[in-house]
Image 1 (cartoon, helix red, strand yellow):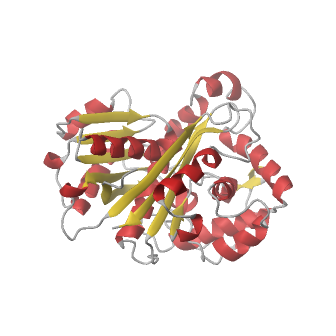
Image 2: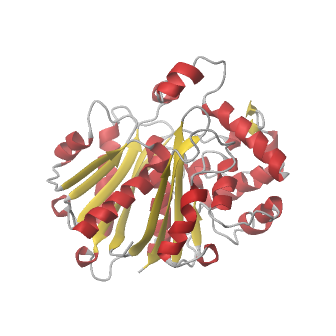
Length: 382
């Protein structure tokens, strides 16, 4: 990529475990959009491109939401790939800006995810789920990722305490994030003694559903406000159906497209100052960091977790990640992008790190076995 697109604004409609009556998917997405535009010093009238991702927006579509928000556009898209939606939309938005199809693009994702909506989503996620997984006496994706976690533990020699170090460290980050739903301290003993959900996954291994939305503003350089926050998009690469659902779940699609992202960006994993990886389960944090090259195949994973993640030497999921901030449906994929952009903008008070290069990965869309979509974006403070 040419680096001509800048992320200049971020917004998050407050995450909540129990949304107030009358809250709609459209209202939380619109709220996040307006917050992101205000952060960028722009207005609805400036927007000529819009991308949205949501599981619960229906029966409306992207164009309906654009109309309700008063947007007049020359570029529009709707992404349905859940945890990988932010990276996919960002890649398309950058191409649209490079082609001159739009100059101010807002990307947003969000859902109203109450108990009923979550149960519907788990049961009817896609045809593979509805026809083959939902009829089984299992706890949705928790059971699938319990199997994946067990395999990862056996392969890498990990124990529950290793995953606990990831979860408790992210809770420490979350304590300084007013937008995180779960901010109370979490000790390793509390993690280890929590009720089992689907062994070896306990309560704090499973991402909690919440309601909320996230948004970013991506612009051509000439539309960026002077003196305003800027993060240059150096590279975005994506992978869809990388293993044809025949892999063991220990390797994600990032292994196939990560090297190209580093090459396009002209940087290496050691250059990264802040990282957000999609964290529906701690095992997926491990898998994505490995596939992105943050630890080598012959490196001791347990030692890496203890010495790099738990010490916060490598800032990973500085918002608290979804495990502590919550997973607002499809916004889970956008949450990491918002956090990395905020860090690069220097707008993450209480948890701010010294960041020039930021990395965010997306992962999602469970088919018969594992996530079928993955992407990585590399950004630079500008």
